[in-house]
Each structure stands twice: as structure tokens, then as C-alpha cells.
Length: 121
Image (cartoon, rainbow, N blue to C red):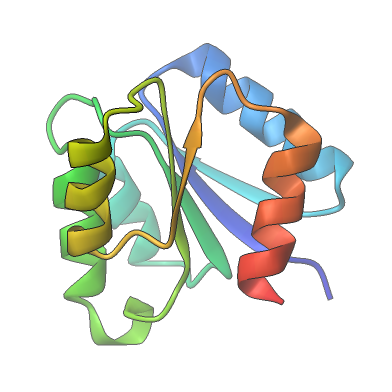
């Protein structure tokens, strides 16, 4: 059974790179362009894991993580933050919101896939 992943990022290039990495690893890739769009996609989907950026329009990653953690059926889904940010206080804020892990862009596709397999394993 393949792993289903929702990737939320406002950069079309990043979404394309994530889709390529996930599909090449045999995973099902679902994409959203910001946190608000991500919540709309989640109305119809229960992925095995979520990847989200932090800095996005409409609803940023912190708000998105917080909203996902407030939905009972999604509460335990692993959420990996994928961002250019690396400040410790932002990592701590993401953990408090409910993030499972943190990956800094640019990402290594193999490490990302390994991290996804680890958190969904």
C-alpha cells in the first residue's frame, strides 16, 4: 500500500519538486498552494503524512498545523515542516503547534522520503 502525502507550499516550483520526489518514491502526492487550500483538500482526504511550508499567504504554516490538529480525524497525522527558516524559536513554535519534524529547504529528496517513511512507519 502506498503512502499518501499532502504537500502544502505557495511556490509552484517547490510543489513540482515535491510531487516529483514523492511520485518517484512510489507515494501518492496531493498538493495545495497555501494553508487555506490545504484545509480544503483535507475535507476530501486523509493522508498518511503532511508536508507544509511556513511562510504562505491566506493561512501560514503555523495556522495550518494548528487547524489540522484541531480536527479529530487528522489529529495524529505526522506533519513535517519544510521551509527556508531555521531559527530555533520558529522550530519550537512549530512543535508547540503540533509539527512532527522540521526540514530546511533546499531539501534532499532521499532524506525527505526517508523522513516520511519513518514518521508513517
